[in-house]
Length: 435
Image 1 (cartoon, rainbow, N blue to C red):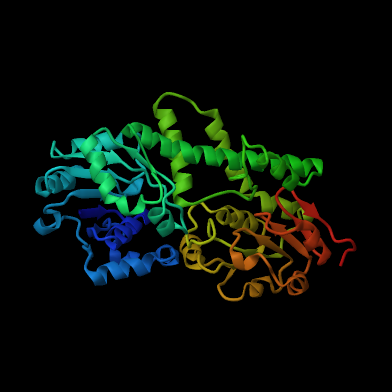
Image 2 (spheres, rainbow, N blue to C red; image 1 turned 90 degrees about the vertical axis):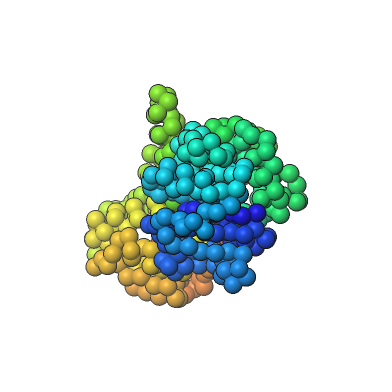
């Protein structure tokens, strides 16, 4: 099929690579705010497993063509069967003119696939811009950062918002190569699919925030929250997914979808106290490690040095959008704390966000270099290279022997046996004898 993809999101890049890989003739028009000349060097794209390689292979093979122009030429819009929109809310702009132009040049039966996270009802509005020459379906973006290629090519499900049977047939043919293991399409009305996407992330965020609240209570009661988590997860009505307490969540899509859901609630005239609490709890949790540091040193933080492992909002990505580390850095610097930060991928993005700061040193190579001269270590992003440290070396480097585990990846008893004061999220342990 002849496909035109418009946008510069992860979902646009992944769709371009995957659809051209299985034989579709794909033209990709990145948004003018993030053209391919810049995207191809983006850390987040190059950190995605297989994605950059597949894009280059598609270009070399000729099944993927990249264009960089705000206005499509006559050849670019001719005989398009599928128009795939993968735009961020900020990239929506004025789509009426270009969509009208594309519809005039497209093949009969044009299907617009809305893969963007827009307000509920936006797919219907997009269809109106096609001037009766095509139909629009909602196919919400369900990709996971760091696993974009895998989640597109081996999907667990597609939420297909579609009110037109021929359009469903075309979308199924478009994605047939990724629907062979089992039936993954869930067809529903367009508005239902748009709201379902937002509701899914709202529920996941609620589970995380609730678990973080329980972790705070466990801290107050002297209970190890890991026992509580296992007890909850063993209940078949609850399960273990998204029950890991931590120092807050971030990311460009997760955080944005929550704000979008809040906007939908507000626009409908329905006040959501629950969603507001979820958002407030998450922002509060981003300061958790700072508060634990403050408590351990009785508020005397001026002049201290802290090492941080991890800046990206999750392992496997170079992005720091809404990442807990940003809140943590502001809190530490306000108290005059020097920070030595290591991340294997997100240093460039971090410096682009916070700039050069007199209280910040960054490291990309050996993570132990960040711990040299530090009083304490804060684990913020659970990159796999941090899971099994050289414990004697780490203990020897930390002047005050304090380990603050923001993702609960370490065993408290083991860390304490190495001579460290361990403080996790709802977990803690002290050395048997102070070093």
